[in-house]
Image (cartoon, rainbow, N blue to C red; front, side):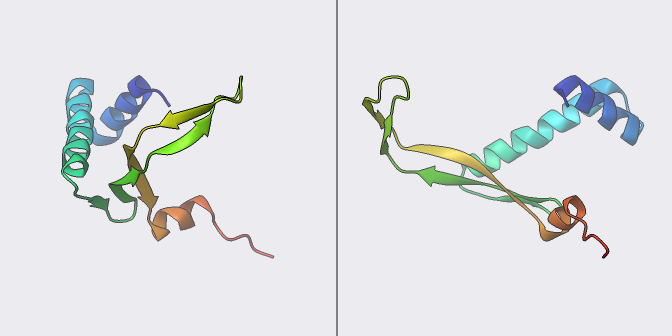
Length: 95
């Protein structure tokens, strides 16, 4: 799903204009970035939580040459799905 398709779907589901839907979705993601950048966590019950994780510096390899390459430490975004979302994505099959 592209950003435009997401905005269309949110606008239709909420009964608002595409412009309002886009501002709302953008505000949500801006808030997630701001909060997690400050070291916090954003949790949405039934969906999951957004947080950050620290990746330490390490040695990698260039796949074309095999040469060792230093990979700098970095901060990455992490999403952890809730048990409710996992259950919705993986319904139990009846025997």
